[in-house]
Image 1 (tube, rainbow, N blue to C red):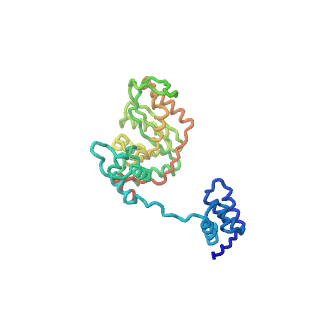
Image 2: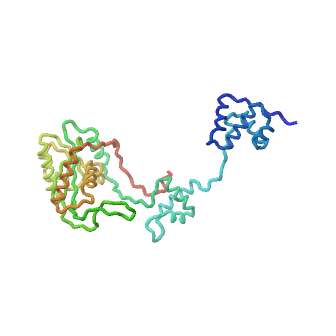
Image 3: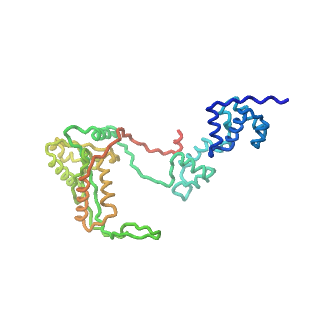
Length: 355
């Protein structure tokens, strides 16, 4: 004689959930079947009749009936499965990273996915997966300057302090020069490509009409720029530009941010002692990015110089002056957000990524 089926009692909340499983088009069919089994059992229908009605085995009905009786709705969920054993582990990933630290095969300049796959004897798809996980791009190459200045922290802190809390009743200026700007003359126009798109551009051929050096000073508080044009960048030209700035602000204290170019160090010329209101702050070596004028030089290049055509040096300088006038009309200070500037070290081992 078979054991009597367990009595199923369904609360109103559980009934709503089970009914939603049966009605939802997105529900997986196995959950919809289990819900219908439990609902039928709660109405007192025998297991044999439920199986016949659902087109399944009586053992299946008995299983889900008992699971719901013991665990409720959670008992209708699938138990976790171990799945297929992992083919690769952490040591396999380390092999891929360690291979990157070795020189590529003879005849190749850089590693590629297939070369790494052959080196470590693993699937190329797994190799790409490891590279994506660590954000490693084999094709993208970058160059950089690493500052080895022993006084990096002190110099950087002084400059960042000027940006975040400038002195009262003083002017903070970022000064630098853009040397040897070429006055290139080239034909401008547009072309229609075979795909139907029209693009603007310029001829590859060009005529050199000379060069000019631009000295510029960015007012950190307002974002406005003052500039001067010179034939070359020598100490004499730098001092001439600085004399113009001092003359424009005769009774104001000036804090000048500069890079370490020898031209910017006129102490041996006795210039600074004659101007007690001027204070120089030098960026750490190979850290000119701390000077905000570099941001403006980038804007100048993209907006007024890149791909342009100039018939003479005078034409070049006039165009730059027009851009500065237009820029100053809507100038605003750059928002310096970096409150902590740290010195970076060059890593030489990809295998250290997991450490």
